[in-house]
Structures are given as structure tokens and as C-alpha cells.
Length: 405
Ligand code: PMP
Image 1 (cartoon, rainbow, N blue to C red):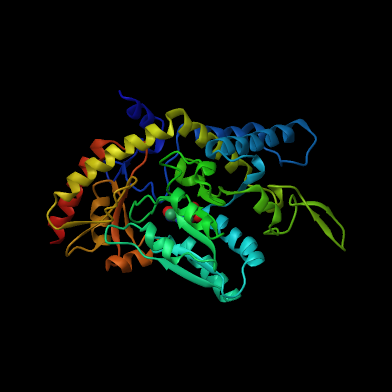
Image 2 (image 1 turned 180 degrees about the vertical axis):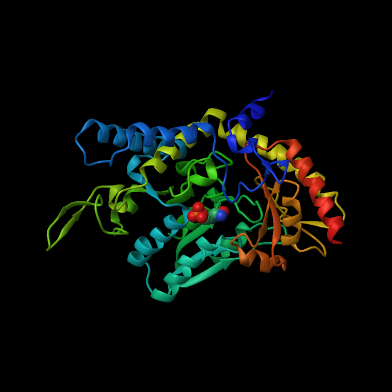
């Protein structure tokens, strides 16, 4: 058995059958499956360590706090943040972006100021800025993509101006798989004094991310797409920026002292973490970090790239199939349509063969509009997928196409 065959064994859910067929899970872009060690970490916490964190002086609470804060340190190291003060636990990418819009955005943007996003953003990196635009009278500008689904650095450079206060971009597109040159984009934005937020929801599961190397100001991701639990994610922010930002929500844990006259806020990162946190989630995320690091992010990227190349070649050979998104630099996501067959019908038929793929607009409706399609079928990969999964995918696509056309 090769390494990745052994890794697959660590995912109990994949031992199930679906409609009498072995489950072929190709929807990791929506959420990944969870390895036994993540499930065990969460079970161990609830079985042996459950207590509220940060407040108790008794042993159990201290152990829960240690486990939870230990996870924060793992995340810091994982993304190479300077300090755990820069690692804010949130519900996920969506909340992280909304937090920046509601706090940094409201405090720093004035009518006429501009946020630039790309045409390939997930709705969670569009709508918060539209809300802010309507509230503050700021501008929202869109960097367009080409027919391969790529942005152009020169086009970005010509959009940027001293009016631009924020560039908010995805690291990897969930609808197309495109990996953006975020380091270069960050450097260009910084030249005009803009801050940079990167939506890393799709990138973090697939590659090594180093926030200091990229140089971005904010970076957001979700645990559930990187083999961790739902309901927890991370907002990385440079300490000086987070320090200057007003809090997001008010309540317990985010305060140092409260009187009816005034409240003094807690230190970072707790200033942004009101209320009892998702303790089990944080611990599960720490276990997911351990899991990914035990394989090695570079090795994950290399393996998934092999799957992507193999799948692209096989799918391209199918008559009537068109791949949507053919960027030079692409992660383990393939979106496609079959001329004359509705993506939903395709995916429904493929489900009967035990193939779990997604058919939708992938919360990126402007991408669908760009390519003039209502939806695509999307296969997205994780460390547990193998070449047999792709053979099954290809066979199911052909069978569904032949039934529908
Ligand atoms: N951005 C991208 C690129 C995504 O793929 C997703 C999830 N599909 C999100 C943001 C939102 O993540 P979450 O739903 O975990 O908040």
C-alpha cells in the first residue's frame, strides 16, 4: 500500500457504500471528510476534558484551556503567523470576512473609498462588501477574469489607485480551481497603500500557506474544508491592524473589565472572541493541522496535482464535455459541463453510481455568468482520493451523458 492508500484508511466514512456502490467522495471543495484522529480528538475532549475555558481555576478547566490554546499555537505555526495574538477563532471563512468588513471596514472606510475583488469570488467575499458599500457609500470594483479563469496582474495594477483601501481576493477559486498569484497581488496593492484580505478557504487544504511570505494583512479559512470540524475557522490579521480595530461582538471573554459606564476590552485575540468559544472545534482543528502536517502540505499538493492532471486528461477525452476553468496554476477542482445535459441531472444520475459530486453555481454566480452557464458539475479532490475514484467518475459521466442525450 502506498502512503495515500494508507491515509485513505484513516477516513471511516469512506468505508460505507452509497446506493449499493462504494462511496466515491469528490466533493471536498464543499467540505472534506474527517480522519479518525480528528474524530478521536473531539470525542476525547467531550469524554475526558469538557469544561469551559479561560475562567476556571480547577484542573479540568485548565486542561480544556491548554488543549484549546494549544490548538491556537498549532494554527499559528501552520500558517506562520508571528504570534497567537494574530490567530482569531471564528465560525469559518464567511464570519472572518464579515468580521473584517464590520470592524476594519467601518472604522477605516469613507464614502468614495474602494474595495477591489475579483470576478471569481465566492459569495462570502462579495456580499459583505456590498453591504458595506450600501452602508458607507464606498465603491466595489471587480477585477475581471479571462476565458481560462485567470486574473491578469497588469489589469489589477491599472485598477489600483490611492482610492483603493482594500484588495479582497480568493487564494484558490472553489468554482474553477484557479490559484491566484496572491503574493504578487499583495505587493501591488501595498504599493498604493491598500490592505489585502485573502480568502484561503480552498487553498489551505491543498497547499502550504505562509502568511508572512505572502505579506497579506488578513487571511481567512475554515477548518471543515481541511479535515477539521464545521463551525470553526480562522481569521489571521497582522497584530497592529487587529489592535487598532474595534471589537466585533460584545459579551463575555472579550472584556477585561465592565462597569455600566465603560468596558475595557480584552487583549488579542480574545477581543474578537465574544462568548463561550467552539472549544471542541478548536481542538478538532488542531488535530486537523497535525493530520495535514503528518503528511506534509507539499506532498499533498503534489499528489492532488497528479489526480488533477489524470482527471483533466480523462474528462477532456469525453465527447461533449467542456471543462470550465483551465488556468495554468490550478488546484484539485474540476468544473465541467456536458453540452445538452443539465448539471443537476448529471449529478443525480452519478449519485446512483455512488459518486458524490456537486452540481450548482458553487456560491459563485458571477463565475457562472462569465462562462454563460447556469451551473457546473464539480469534482474536487482530497488526500483520500485515488486514481480509481477518477476512473469511476469518468465512467459515471459517460453513463449519465448517454442516458441523458
Ligand atoms: N470562500 C471560498 C473560496 C469557499 O470555497 C467557501 C466555501 N465553499 C467559502 C469562502 C465559505 O466558507 P464557509 O462556508 O466555511 O464559511
